[in-house]
Image 1 (cartoon, rainbow, N blue to C red):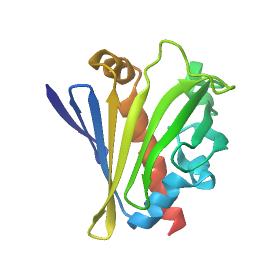
Image 2: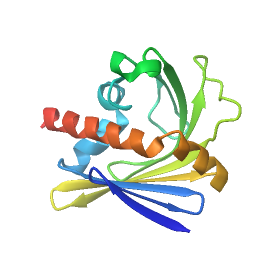
Image 3: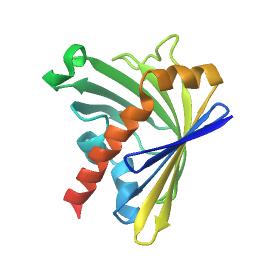
Length: 174
């Protein structure tokens, strides 16, 4: 089964236990890749609007770990205000300006993976697109049920908001 949806320049589709998200950014590929691969950039745009991200560990290399916390700072987000969401990623493969493969999991502040929460294998591909950059995120879940769990939590809406922030950040850098 495959479904496809276009939201705010974001194209999403599911293929079995994979969630594929694509978006074109009006910035050169090297800059887009750099914004995904450097701590100081990630802290400026990672996470949905109204959330700030603090990176606690960052080793951008195969086998390296990225441990971060997203914290809701927007009082208008009601019950989410003040909430923290910790993440733990491990980089598997990096091809400069072309591809990043990593696992992503929910964690606690100490970096322990959260029980009962899905872990994802993510392949990020960066493609030249007439002076712009097409980013394709392919998130592979262990099961279709795990994918459904994350979709029900609002992953597509989160990506939409995050990529809007990313777009704004890229404009500031150029």
